[in-house]
Length: 203
Image 1 (cartoon, helix red, strand yellow):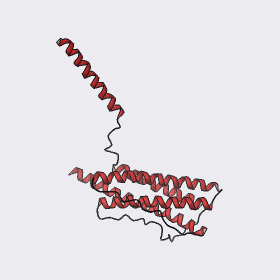
Image 2: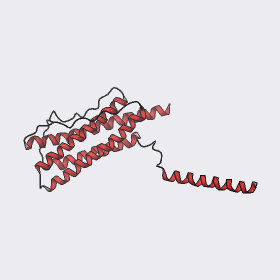
Image 3: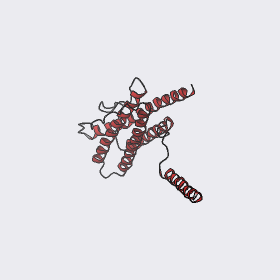
């Protein structure tokens, strides 16, 4: 009887071990590195690189003006502490994405059959994808640092009144230039936050 019971017990333990192995294979890996500052800095570097590349493509068929229109988002990062700065980065990333969508609309109306326009549209779409990726990682940083902190509400779409082709082209150029400059400022802030994290861990 004992031998029969021990045999059943061994089969049951073996079953649980196999089941545990199956779960460990099926479940996703832990995500503690999902929002490392290094990864977010790398992502921002890519955003800056793609903004520079998009600007070069844009200039082939569009006018640029050193005087950037007032309606284009600022390139600054505001906030008194890390959470506030991350929240500002989050809000401005959403705002830039909305302005890039408006640039896409203008490009489609200005160059309906131009082959170069397709390349610009693809680059603008890639920039919006990169901003969405940045939104996810910044949100993760905010929630990791302070679970009670919230991400800013989505801003409304820009209400613009550009009637002339030149205005639309200059606006689009301004959005890309400011996005590039903003990305560089964000990178500096993230590198500073990363250094603070490393220093804190070494204490």
